[in-house]
Amino acid sequence: MSNDEMQSFAFTPENLEKAKKIIAKYPAGKQQSAVMPLLDLAQRQVGWTSQAVMEYVAEMLDMAPIRVQEVVTFYTMYNQKPVGKFHVQVCTNICCLLRGCDGVAETAKQVLGVEWGETSADGLFTLSEVECLGACTNAPMMQVNDDYYEDLTPETTQAVLEALKRGETPKTGPQNGRQFSAPEGGPTTLTELTFVPAPLGASNSKGEKA
Image (cartoon, rainbow, N blue to C red):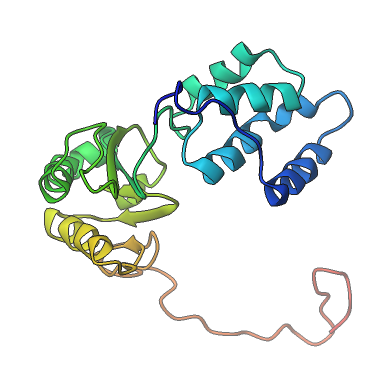
């Protein structure tokens, strides 16, 4: 759907109440600071930030539409055209590049049958190349909608995408068995925690005697 095809936009009653609560978080005269969460809310409602969305948010916050457009075009989190049900974003920044994101990217293209910026014929998947997504310790990684898939290989990338195709919910986070961002071989320090009771009469953090 192009900007021309989306002639108007309005929050649903439920999202309008959410929008009002978001705006109310900001001091009087600073309501325009709500522009980013309102754009995110609108995008979650219709899938992207069309010209109609930007003008609606601008009017709600008493902003010039061009200022809202500046926000949308600066941050890659806002989709400037419709995307599929699953927006697959592959990080190709330095840490992911050094850890093999090329293989992840090529696998995603092959499995989904698309190139960067394209949407699969069934409308399920859109593939995007993005800058750092902040999971550098667990590189290479990709984001699918709100979920992170980390420590990827071509094989685990294919497994995740194929699971999504089947309507399944693949495990998020590291795909190599590591715990969060711990070393891949497991903890190397503080592997055994021993509780040592405080001496009788010692004060705790609140200054209370034991």
